[in-house]
Length: 579
Image 1 (cartoon, rainbow, N blue to C red):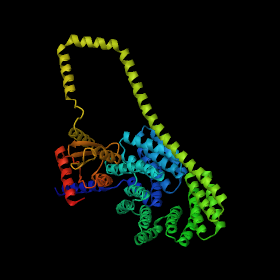
Image 2: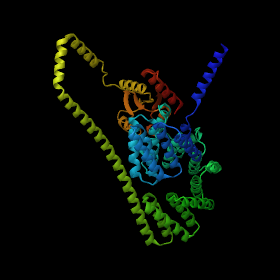
Image 3: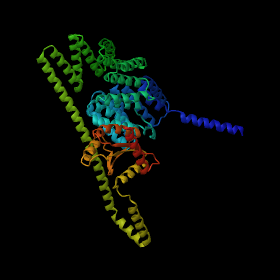
Image 4: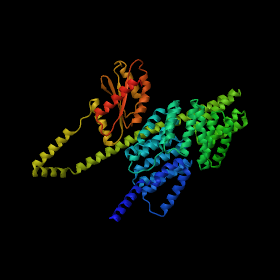
């Protein structure tokens, strides 16, 4: 008896141990962003183990995907492009189409490093479409974060904030995915949102999201250093030099944790850019000299080009015209050779301003004209890219329609060929039993009766949205606005202003004479609070009129009454508190 009891305890201990054991590839997925050098060693060990065993195609594909992300962290963009193309081809060949969006995102990330958005953005559109089709929230977050980041860099801010909002909402569904592949740390999604708000000069919210990233459990190593440098720059723009110094000092202390020369060089260059903005050009120059030496040794042309531009700015401040012109000529030559028009525009503009200070207005005008031509080329490239995206989406819809038409024609052809057999079968069925026909007729009529009608009232819309959310296991939030004090004349303009701040998937309904109902599918409680903050400026414009705004997020046991009641109670509480 004691022996049996001992065996049962041992089995329970083993089961709990196995349950707590983490997949080594899950560990590598996070380690790639934190400590790339350690991730490289672990990937090499797994590759060696795979050579002496027979791994499944899924394991081999995932290892390739993690290695692709690792190459991006090391700046090995050409190798990442080759590996991503091979990985996507392999996934397509073995019928694992749900894996393709991961490799497409990796490929787009590598092309974006060369400023080749004409290839990167359409790839991300396709990746997002495939991720939706095959229900891969990890791929969705990866592609949305990168597309939001690229849209921020190209000033497409409306699209960027929608992508990053969706990425944050979808992040909660990552753990529910059946098979894990790859996903970015949530701290990087927060960092992307912080950078977007920094570009819009909303430094308060930019710091809020950056600090959320710093509080994330995975925020160590390289991830933490990146976020600390972002926080230092934001604090400096807010005028808080003490906080900026503290963040910058902590980022400097993390430099020894960057284990490769390229990572150190990128860290030095980023710190130097902040020091230049703070007016510490001597400190910046020492860091940039070390960084430039590494970039040139490893033939990182883009990094070298941007570093030379920073060194040229320092030389200009010190009056060293000869050094400045040489560095700017080198940077311009690299930008022209690589056709990085957005960078070329700023380089020519810098030289034009320099010539103007020397009273050489003819040369300043010529350089300004070159800057305009570079800006024109950059704008044309961006416009062409947007047009390619639009055409690709139209082509995707057209191909879906064509496929549906072909399937329909094939079905009609088969139907016509077997018409005789169908008639004979119908006659036999009618002759065999009239009762069976009556039964089928009743079943058909009952099915028609039981089909749910399309929602007509706002309450029916809410019931349908809740049913779909519960069935699909995704989040749903509502906002309830009390518009009792709004005149009917002003109501259409208020609704139009609110709709501009909502997503295409959101819905605004006139719930009653005194209330507006906003349905926010795929939106968690934190997402609803973010929407409320975005709507607050619109509500503030209604001066002298009280608009109670309440929100609620659906739970599985909720009904329409309980959900509406929570939103109404919160709205009254906010109104009483004066929020």
